[in-house]
Length: 192
Image (cartoon, rainbow, N blue to C red; front, top):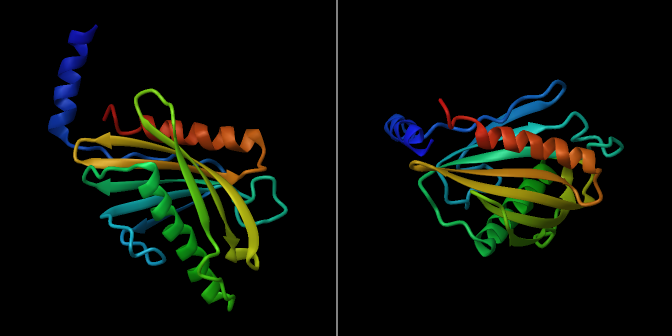
């Protein structure tokens, strides 16, 4: 069995890194942003961010409010640890709130985002869990407490960082839907 895998591994290394693909479910929205991100230009990456928004993402009354998944497809193999992700996610969510807030004439304070990241055990992938306290500038700067499940996968000369984002008090079914989407993304591009 192991012998059969060797040609596939050699072929995959000759083909180069395949970008992951997050599926687009019915009713969901997608968006792709190139690095550097306009709202978080300090993130030191080249590549892109690919997002999938659940149907109720921007509706505070929806069961899937502020629930989405995204992947950072990054050139190179940067070291990603809890402390570094904490700093980067603070810049990301603070920058997002500030940028959106400006467009809506909201003054978002500079310390509006607090992030804590911890490493969690997973097989064959670096995994982290983050808690993010920030504001939803899309909806009048209402307070948000989010949970992020993060998985890092290295592919040849690129790194894929997958995020599943939902309110901490969110429904388990929403979190499971997001995790299933991320699992498909983790598997995508590996057998091409």
